[in-house]
Length: 330
Image 1 (cartoon, one colour):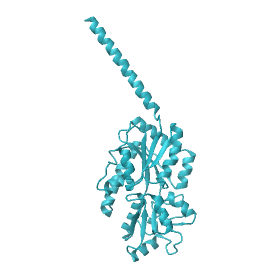
Image 2 (cartoon, one colour):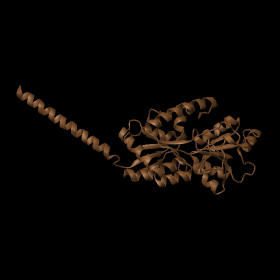
Image 3 (tube, helix red, strand yellow):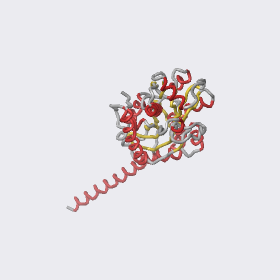
Image 4 (spheres, one colour):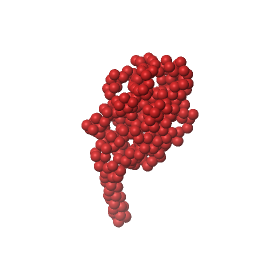
């Protein structure tokens, strides 16, 4: 009997030691994150605000975390292709993504999504706001204000076009909200990203665009594009002389584009915490601050919990707006 007791005690001791060893190994593994490159998915082509933010932050993150941040552009379907890829990725912290308003809009915009924007992702942090801006070709002498755009569109229903970076993007929603509030008949022309849309705008293939200030500002500064109005409720520090849409003839208009980061649902909390702290730290570096200022981005930064709450509130808000406006991807 005593031998059995001693044998059981020995087994318990071994199990306890093994458990402690397991905890030590697990803790060491978690503390070692990241041990290899991290893939950062951008669900739109290069050239837009989203791409610039990811690449700029990625450089600072790589230095802080000690591993490369590999930015991959996965455009298509209003960001849904890249988002679905991340939703199905292994939740180990080695695949993350940057998204914009579409994360909150797509559940109401598309009848069927192959991912759940809330359930399939782990929030990391809100990053920044980047205003959109209504622009047209600088060579157009007949349009110099929002009032001119509205007047001509009402006089010629269906004649004028506005480009976007894809259905459901903030650029599309800005134009759709503009035509809805202004009771205008204008044709939406979606592209696979801001870059190709701006190219056609510069070439005169489309008339207008509610583009991100990031991709339009260089063309505004060079005199190729004419800035008519900012979509946010306040003027942008990057273009302080450009009025808002609301103060230019369309009261009540406001569209606030935001950008945030997510990982696949199930990513360990300690990994999310590491990424969140590194991103917030990166946004306080001089290089990122300078880049943000150059592209017209205003820093936010948030906890994962704050982003989760914000995403839910934005999802509820856009569900109501899309229901009232009748905007749909189908």
